[in-house]
Amino acid sequence: MTLWMNITLLRRYHSNFIFWVVYAIANAALMLLFVPLYSASISAIGTKSIVSFILIGASMLPLLEETVSSVAGDANFQLWSGIINYSFTTPVSRYIYFSLNNLSEVTISLMIYSPIYLIAIIFALNYLTPIGILLSVVCFVIGFFSMLQLGLMIGAGMLLFKRVEALEGIVILFITFLSGAFIPLQVLPSSINYAALFVPLTSSLYLVRYYLIGSSLIAPVYLMWIITISELIVFAVMAKFIFRAAERKAEKIGFNYI
Image 1 (cartoon, rainbow, N blue to C red):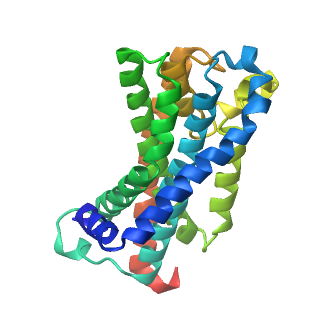
Image 2: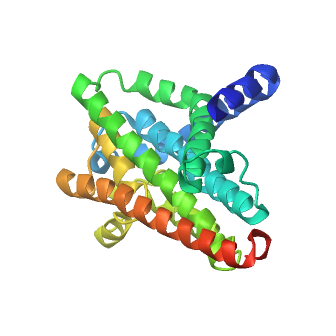
């Protein structure tokens, strides 16, 4: 229902949709300014498709923004203000309601940023294989849902720990600079690579690059798969636990007082 509502809004406000698409294309174009930096490290990166390598990282950053930042803010606001519209008239839990509601909004954002993915694929045509495309999509979806759960966890955690909005900023900062989206981790010291493995988004991002364009990994492929799947499971369990803890606190003292 919320997906239909968001699509209706896009159709009604054509200019806004066009400007967002232009922003997505400009975002990808500006990322290409890093080509000389990446080209100097081509042997460490492991692929000659530098443009695709950069754009895949650029396409994951909007995913981070929409799934973590926007979802966290929305969950925080709705829980705090007590706006639980629709959830009181349906048997599903608030956790499921927020998950599906934010999933629809993020889906629209992915549609807006689709030009970035398209350009990355065009430059990676010589490297694409059917199995590679399939595995990269699987990694992307797992990373997508992991970030969605992380956003819900942070949103509920903000309220549970007395409106600590700075928590979101710290998480975004670490993911942005240690996930390898901007700077290729292959050229950094191995100690940083080991730490970056446990930064959300890193493993799924590098697996997507690995299967699409054959770039090198910072750890054995089986280990990165284990970390990618474990992140989804751990974030989902923690999100549901923290979300429920915030609800219980709100039921005792009122939504507006937590």
